[in-house]
Amino acid sequence: MQNSLMTIEQLKSLPTSPGIDLGCLVRGEPQELNSFLGELEVDIPFQGSLAKGHAYFILSDGNGRPRIDAFAQSLVNLVTEYAIPRSKINEAFVEYERTKSPYAINALNRDAKNLFTELLKSGEGGELLLFWFAERILKLPQIICKMSLKTNSNMHIHGSDGIHADVDPEDGLLRLYWCESKIYASVNQAVTSALNGIYNFLASPFSFGGTQDNDIRLLGDLSDLGDERINDALKQFLDPQNPSFCSVKNCAICLVGGTSPSYANTSGTPQEILSQINESLRIELPRWLKHTNKKLKELKVEEFIIHIIYLPFPDADEFRAKFKAALVGVSHDEA
Image 1 (cartoon, rainbow, N blue to C red):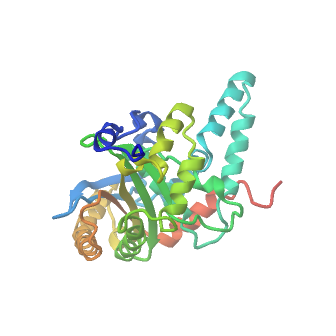
Image 2: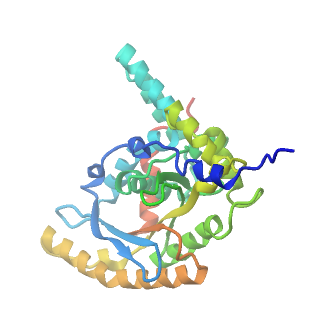
């Protein structure tokens, strides 16, 4: 009887990546939020770990006031591409080209806003911000719109907060980035919660019924990259029953935010205020990094690629409230 299992030679001949450039799926430009976000320090290494830290902060206006309001309003401009599948967006643009009317595009924006919860303690503003950092800064395209799967706006996304992907340039493996966003009273609290949450996606190999199972099924069945060729190429790598699934590497992105005292008690010219905030945050940053490094070692996830994005706020609760207010333009009760 002929052996139906694959030989070593056959396994070696399997592609290690989908053979496509996922970078072509990245949208937008980092400059979109240049007037709201400043870069403190990026690509920060952690000793004995593949993780990297990236620290940013909120810019102030000419009177020294952090630009939280306008920042939250600008984030709302991202809701359509974050929450609506690419194929629907493409269809709306085709309709625009045909009719020269933005009606279909505006309808998608309304639908996207209505997917966000009205719960005051929701972390969806942080999830949207993580999406922006992943696509604009890290150049990692979102490969499924989990928000579009919600059947009730007042529920939260189950599983990871998002899934992005790229191909490792060194070994050709497909890298899945499981996302976790936490904005708490302090940055260190957010670090602890985010890494605890992402641990479940990294610590154990895939198993049916395990932490990754539902999201992997969604990826295989419902990932929508706006290009059938790319969708088909990825499907074999997102099928746990396919040998190509062995070429998938788990990685992570965590966005961690919290209230920081560094924005308080500043005075002087805009440049002086900027310098004061920067100097104060550079005192806080080592404490966040030390706590993160300790947590990475505690969880034993040093061998995983993890991007940790630090974003301290003048007031984390104010950011949540301002983001909710910016979404009010279309209420969930409207037809």
